[in-house]
View: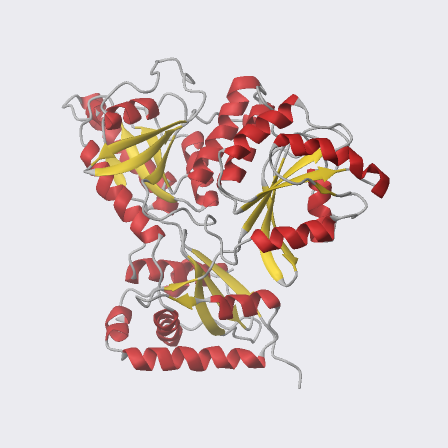
Length: 507
């Protein structure tokens, strides 16, 4: 495997060379490269990616998000069977035990030549406890982040008290809701769907997910109400940006929220794990409104925990998914731990923007020898354990006193701006062309993989796709990422570089 030092590029004057390129030449080059892809075997996703890029009135490129259809309902009503029926294959776990599906799972589906994202959720249980409560939270968020909702009811059982509670949840939304009366396996059973009119959600759609009866007619109706481009797959622009406050127990997350809000909004106690549910609070900080989510501290070996701690861990993951940027709070009075690193990994896996807040800094701002020693050790720990997130803005704060809290806002703004950043296709291909000319991929087994074309597939986080003739070394991919960071402003956001290896068409 190639070492990263094979690809050094500090003195290649790449920035200056790109600056000198003519805009028209950049676009012409990119179009010529795109046309060369016609000689290679591309699949449907490739075509969608290449044809789907749009340019708005201001010349900004974007890739429209697929509409989102969420399937919700209490446990064991046949949601996963319906998912499998719509997909035309067995994907979702089906078991005759309530609550098998716990998390939301997203699949790519198609009907009437329309592609959409299909979200399968855990069952929604009113007054549920422990893991069932996490299932409820997952479903609530699925409703919030969907364009269309399919509410599945077991027509044989009829509407239960839990179904009534789900209806109350659904009545708050203005999105299209389809009432699906499942387990109508025979035309003579359709009368069993009639009482579901009383739920007040309109006409029930009688289907049998297990046999496929009525599913096609139901999907025809759903597609009529499904937008071509999702209005919710990307977080709404213009509202307060959503900030998840993460960290292991007792590092000062609640104190940070309280100080930002200017009042005691969250219970603060020296007992680790006081916070159980995330508390969403709109606060004004730096002259702007922000939605802060305070989350329960993540503990090690989450799967071993039961009850409130287990639920709190899942709610933390849920809050992270709803957020746009995560502030990971680290207690500087303690050594950086495996838990701290794992929490940062969770943020990277989620693709959210990242800011590191080193809390209790006031304890280190003293002349005592012991504190000076701790500062020295901390710098070494950061250099050793956090090297992979050296791109994340760092703020040294005291949540208890509010000291340097004003530094948090510029860090959040920088991270979010770069999380939203898009490099135009022409400029990205100019960057690749100049980079490869100066630093070609080394020969491997007598062959040299080429980059045919590149494009930014999405933002949040910035995600790039390279069409290549062979696999690029992991070290070379990291080199591309590093040079992207050096030439463009990507502080505070992970960036993803994916490959699509394509073979030349056979004549």
